Length: 232
Image 1 (cartoon, rainbow, N blue to C red):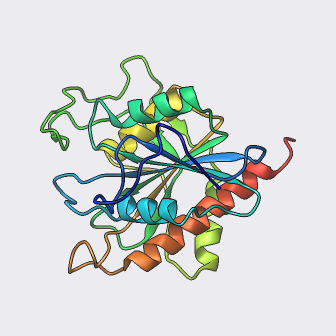
Image 2 (image 1 turned 45 degrees about the vertical axis):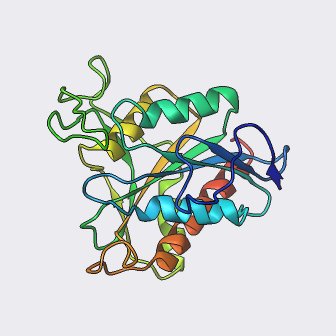
Image 3 (image 1 turned 180 degrees about the vertical axis):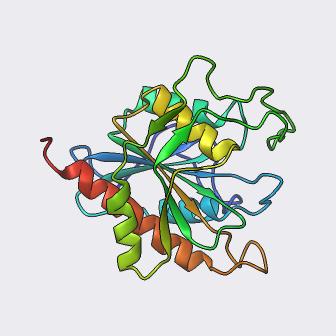
């Protein structure tokens, strides 16, 4: 089910996502997953995570027995995490899965750690830099993902996709957003999936959007299955 509200907008004219706007999919009694992708940024003018998130939202995709909210994030130091935090404040989620692109990756990566490191020199899509070598001055050096990382990786393996468990999400907005969400405890379960670039976005890429979609759906389904299990 798609719930109509003042934060639900049409994808017409913007086929790769609606930045900062929620699309609600599912029922009101199921575990709720917030599934996020990133918009464009200098290294990825066409971002496959946004393309897949937009497509799944248009199709009202959700795993059986689960509810999915979709959100496209701005690639901004001061904006990406805040967009998610505002969304879950108004509509709490049981889990948050963020999908980002690693343009040089040769496999999918399930990130198991958010690290308190940030590039102080790389500009975001708005041309701004963070100006600090860490995400949070008083934060821990690293925080473990609270998502079912092994289950997500196993789901991708079952689909025949190359996948690794990673302890280094980089020093750009992907790691920054993951760490912020874990540090602020935005939801009980927070995870991150790095996807490779897609051929539809860059000619030299080794994967296509259908495979990116396959990976995102497999990871999200595994995540939702874990959310559906009774607490120990």
